[in-house]
Image (cartoon, rainbow, N blue to C red; front, side, top):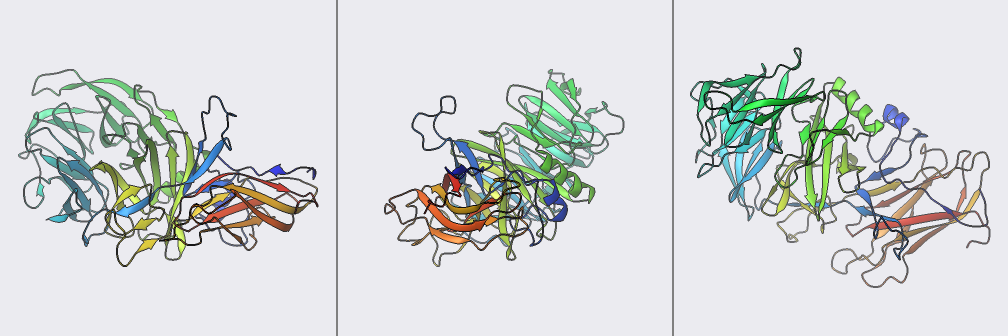
Length: 524
């Protein structure tokens, strides 16, 4: 490595923790001391990269080609305690959001007022749909307990279509029909905008003889019927009752690994994603029926190991400020440090990781499920019975209170973490005189965070150990004179080189742009 000028520190645009790391420790933010991660190309945890300026014509005044920003926080949406646990999914219907938790269905209005409807058996995530009746009929299906009508005006009621509907494992709505999938491969269509069933109005998926039918999804005007081995695409051909109204259009060779490993069909998102039987994530974008594989190898391996261990993979999504994110999570009960969450940024086509603080360690992100409602994106909370809203001006993991700071202020910090790739100089070791990190500074607030700081640490043995972090101020609001943060005299690099880590846990806007390191003895 030359010492005459600073060397750029490589930071990942997409998280790439590496294969050996996943053998020795889970995808948490704090691997145990003594483990090594030599294949890592760097990690992004609770942050994402996006270009600055116009990426088609860079170099026109932007301070850096890209910026790494903190992921959005979460704010409690329900105004009063729900008393529930185990969020299962929801849907806005006119002026109410129907929300489901373990063995319960409830409603929440735009002001956050919570009302329990009563018992809705089950603990797994549900599929939920409404029709165009006035008022709308709302039906939810639990994979193990069948269909329930939630819009009765009272407690949820078991729905069997007058005895003509076998127990379904999913529901969706399109073109006036509720479509119910059955585990034996049949798909039933309801009457148009009605809760009526004809025992003869069904078809059977038959593309793969050994496949199990898991889920029906309405997308792009088509009905996608996901089995464990393929996806059959059906379209409306206006067959008259009691004939099934749709006919098969094509068959995709990418099935669904588990019933709840699909997302993006939600209103306002309209970009379909699912985890297939080959442990890869596929993306079917608007305007095409041909999915593409978007999975990094590290994530495919992670999915495969946990599915083979009998665990659940859950897909969800959210959006904010014109950005859309797919979320892939490993669910276990009870939650533990092996749980993990990855995100895919549709705007940049890059991946990052999400974590939340749980029992003193970083575990999976606490946001689960997700659907648009009341001009926001709502999610359940894996650590409580609260309903949360994506909030990109809240820099905590969770802040309690509907759009206001509660008294007393209650929050859970969100860790912003970046780990660099390797600055290699093998076989020559080098003494690092200084390293400079360019942040957006002046982000503190005299009302909330008086002295926001970042912690900078480094590893000279491929992440087996990390040196004690050095704390540097990010600056009070409007009082910072420079965007450059410097650490000096950090010692000699290891035989393979050096990796850097940046942590910020203070709840402030966090944006990082680039960094360099230098071994020049005159750099002080």
